[in-house]
Length: 97
Image 1 (cartoon, rainbow, N blue to C red):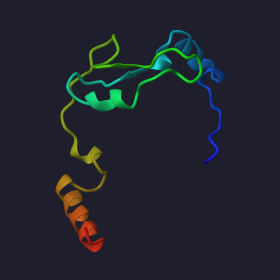
Image 2: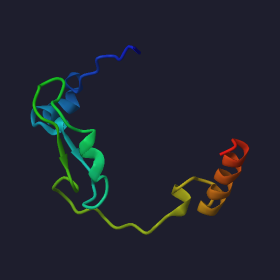
Image 3: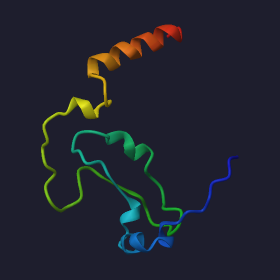
Image 4: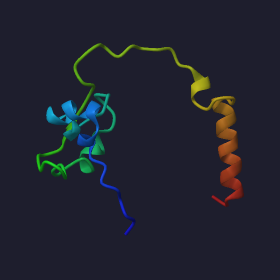
């Protein structure tokens, strides 16, 4: 087994209030349609407080999420989406996939 350090969020002052409010047990999908299968992973009890983990479809309450225009440059800086697909095909071919 690989040793995993004990990094409790409670050790960080900025995170402690959110842990006290139980936010560390919640996983937001930020989508009402996507990531529905994450409930198969994010389940059981929290390892520190023993309370149940919770998946919440959508975003936390607050300001609305803005709809930004698509920016392909953020996909992979310096190359277009089409370039990325071509590079991917070449790598797969060289790997024999």
